Length: 42
Image 1 (cartoon, rainbow, N blue to C red):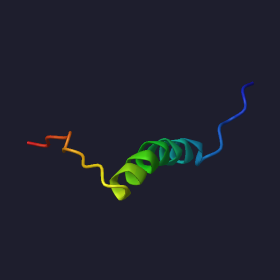
Image 2: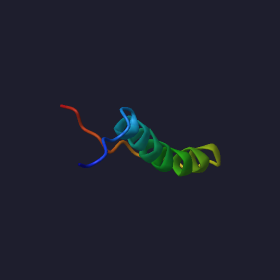
Image 3: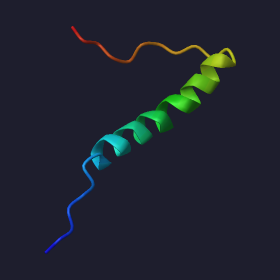
């Protein structure tokens, strides 16, 4: 029988992935790099 995943594992992985994407972008933005919007919700 396989062990069950901890209940918050998926959420923790999602937030780690988001932090890995946002940290470098935040660093670059703080140091003057500008970014264009990449999402179009229309």
